[in-house]
Image (cartoon, rainbow, N blue to C red; front, side, top):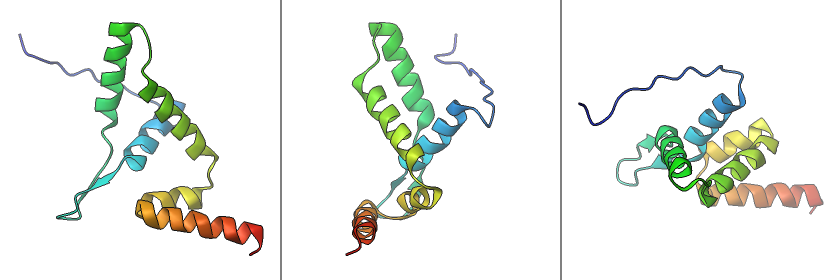
Amino acid sequence: MPASFIFPLKVQNQSKLASFIDWYENFHTTTNPDTGRKRKGNVKKFLLEELENLLTTGKASTQVSKVVDEFNQASLLSPEIQQAKQNLSESDFLKFMELMEKAKAGA
């Protein structure tokens, strides 16, 4: 018997789960500092680990709560700011947000 098996799952494009998957892959993108290659966040691994944890312990992990909160916060951001978050480094994005706050304050 094989050590694992494939479990295909169809998700409608307009569903909240599809939005979460797309957001997770982009929000948790990592960049290899040596090559500059970007890798999307591994949403399958995250979901499988958290589901396994839930079935084993009977409780959701704190990581799930944190990620869901991040997802909900990101959905409140405008599409332009979401794109900036995806395209800028973390330090550049923080600088961008500081400038946005400064502009809102009228300084």
